[in-house]
Image (tube, helix red, strand yellow):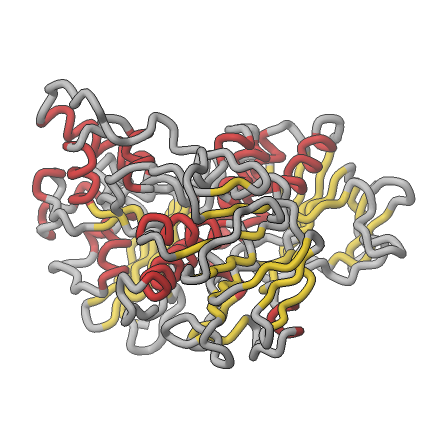
Length: 540
């Protein structure tokens, strides 16, 4: 920070506290709108720079390396941007408009808090030492440092216990099972992923994971972690003891709001913001991502954070001073090899909800569609997600279901419901990359500009760079585009060959990445499950 040139007095000083997925995306959005009158300083606590936290489970599973999940610019050049990693922000002086760090003070005209969340560590006897540090062999699962520690211990461990049967806990458990460990998930609730799934879906998911070597224990309350120099096991309230060389704590996260609270900003569960994502107390301060609370809602997924980054970038740069955030519809995908799961919206419903349900526990398939006034309000697709792209589009847009909703659960029935199968007939406005709001039309445009591979499409549109759930979809569209026009690509494809970016401490100014900034695509139809088991269509 101290080596950065002093910007002109006429320049608006923007400081972004937090260089995770929300902060890095905001900096990139500002860069793409940059008109030369901004100086942006991003302060990140982690030494590694920005990376895709959603894909940590892939690193844990050994599917990919840490370098493959880096995000942010590859190189920095020119004037106007400074990224500082391994920086601890100690306080905010709002009256002086300064951010105080362990490496000095940074002045601001506009401050954006993107501090994310922290892991919640339950008060279990023996889990923490007197100094507050976790017992060796016990880890939270939030950062690359956590992931590296887990992988190092797993290399010599025989058994692992995962505390928490939510999305993150199950992904960690599947990754460890894939490394050959005997894994047990201990979940206090009545079924796994109880925030996203109903009980029947939870039971089918548990059975699917057990097939893959993950033991699931629900209704389990852990009362003690055993071990002196290293964890040796855990004890449950019913007296059961489980041996473990490794314990992963995945019992939830909480918004990181300490800085905001200490600076006098209004904090409920998160930093309270309005539709323009400004703090309700200070128009010079914005908050985005998991640390913010909009309309009573704290979002824990990446798509809302990235949408918020777009809004704030529009407001700060003046690209659209009237831009407002209207909330997000949440779609959850489990990233666990061998298990397909997509869940969205309200999956329980009420007396006015129409429910179409298909259950085949023996085949580990469960599907549920919830509708109100002909519109999808929630869905669970487990064991077969071939129709997830179409269902997600209808849910996202609040569009009416075309005719009988049953074909939304089975690809083989789509024609009778007038749901289009041929990519040529899919409207350009259709969205499949929910994380980045990428449309078919935008991917087609980028392909025509020369991005002739999934990697190049990812660099040009950001499709596939969120949760990765649309990768097969984008590949299908690229294959279809090649088949439609197999001619050679233009000599200069405009999109970089590798969408990953490296960041080193205190670099300045972004490299232009591509002119193909855009948004995702509907999933081509595949083979679906034969509806030969139990089918229920009812109002409940």
